[in-house]
Amino acid sequence: MLTNPLAEIAGPTRRRHACGFTLIEILVVVVIIGILAAGTVLAVSLTGRDRELDKESTRLFELFKYAREQAELQSREYGIMFKDDGYEFLAYDIRKAAWGSILEDDVLGPRKLPDGLDFKLTVDGRPAVLTRPAGAKDKTPQIMIFSNGDLDGFAVTLERDGGVRSYTMTQDDKGAVILQPLVEQSRQ
Image (cartoon, rainbow, N blue to C red):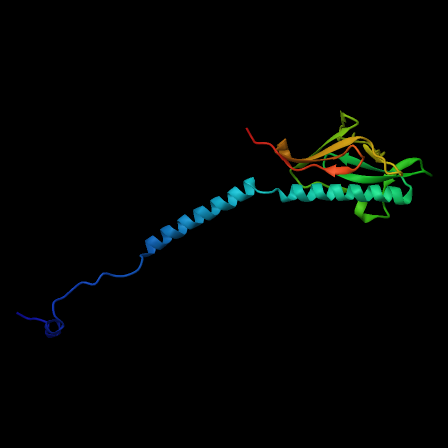
């Protein structure tokens, strides 16, 4: 019988068990972590803050306050014309007896809403139509900001498509413009 002389010196053979994880086990863990991370990201983006809506509502609120201050400082009538896809601040030109764009202040220039955001406007308790006729050239604001700081009664709601989330800007009993807290409606 032929035997290995080294095996006799080493003693009886024992099989050692390998330590560590197999490649398959590592891949399964990576896939599970990936699924959990994706679920977390989706949950935060679906139930988290709507940054675009927050930014646009804050911008409109601050621009409105700025336009009101400018109206008082310059003793000039200002207004806001809302459209389907945006809004524009206007000033009344006494010499032309007409409303026009504000060319001397870039801050109050025309603004477009990002896709997915819409306005709803109520003036003096009545809903306002935001769609302008195709050939309309005149610019008439729906909300007027008078040179003494007074305003038309209004409520403008900036909402995500379908009205799931919205902010409403209006004025309180003392005439101060306020931005009401975010309203979230559950989808059904």
